[in-house]
Image 1: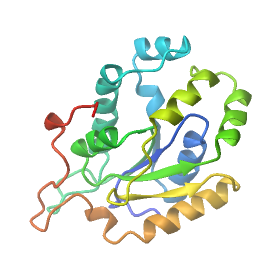
Image 2 (image 1 turned 90 degrees about the vertical axis):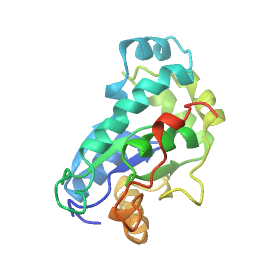
Image 3 (image 1 turned 90 degrees about the horizontal axis):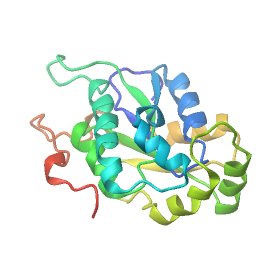
Length: 205
């Protein structure tokens, strides 16, 4: 997975202070694709709520996840006839729960995930050291409680972020390369979308 524009869009996921933006930017640079931070897609109301130390609920997240999903769909791999969008993308997005990830894949079935893992004490140290971010460190515990780790039947991988960024990116690329048919994930043999129907997916659940 080294810059092939037919590749699936990638979501770098995890809790606050896991390094989603840092790793996501470095991964996108290695792959030669665009990087988008899903934090930039939050509404002003969501930002104000988090800045006040109030966790988002599923009603807050639903339109945001749909906005992120639209980005993934617009920049996903080309379809079988070559008529679809040809560019890929790396998006940094918390995507903490399985229903949230299913909602993203309802928009872009080929999406794959890279979960960033770190010990809670490492995350707390990083969160407290951050400056200029609208999410206060106090919300980390809420995110850790909400996190549903990537399951074995979800397309993607988990990488430890205790190593230097370049090593984390190399590990992520190696893990993604090990996924067979990454660009075809989420499509059945007839080329139809095999992702979940977003209209049938509650954000909660």
